[in-house]
Image (cartoon, rainbow, N blue to C red; front, top):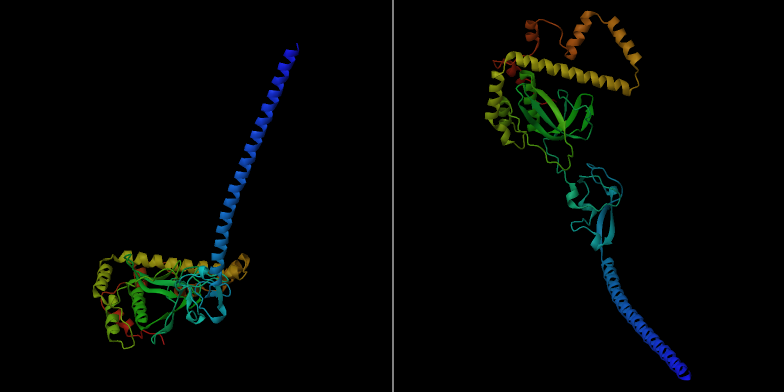
Length: 366
């Protein structure tokens, strides 16, 4: 009995001793792993800190190197001419300055900005352009014979084009700024050559029933100007070649071949087709005038009742002869026979008499 107890006691002691030893080994292993992990983490942290310190040092060095740059002192719209009040010079870290940044305000004065710019926008050379010196033959010219876009505004850029009844369409003037606008009258800056080219186009509109109209640019400060390709009247070409006021002569417009093509196309066109085109153009112009009148009346606060009342008064006061006279003044075709209609509408000229009469008048407005 005592032997059994002794053996059991020894087994218990041995088990406890083994458990203690295993616990001690486990604790030692865990402690070692923890210390090793802390050591590795500390090493990594030191490496990261060294990299951060190096980056901060480099950033500090970069920020310490400043560079002057011209920026906008306020919001500027595309097309505005830059003045000293629009600009200022600040210092920025060299890394933040564009490679082609401008350092001096004097390099930007008088130039035109191409795009909208907000406050403190650094300016570069590609964002502006210079209008250049004013040519000696540049003049302000007003025109009242052009079909204008209904939403045309002062300051926009347009092409002046001419469309013949045959469908041939040419550019007469390219990228002209609307200097001023009043109703159906528009002002442009034109040189001597462009004045004569426009006079030739006006003569074509009178003789051949062509339409002179304007179209606007979508983004004028980024778009290149179109190339004028209108073949000028042969008589005007002769005048251009001998005119001492023309400083630069556009040789591409001197081609008589293009002009001959227009004359040939017009001579081959049926007379009734020309009449239809002219009548359609007249009706369209009158519709545009009516729409503009209604819009102006709405803008001025004139009510429909006032418009009807005014119309009634006009109908009572005006006699049939007055109405016919007024219609003739605004170009409204009156009901006539076909023979009378042909006589009232300007027909293409077979002889040069009408063209001669036109060119005997001064080509340049005083």
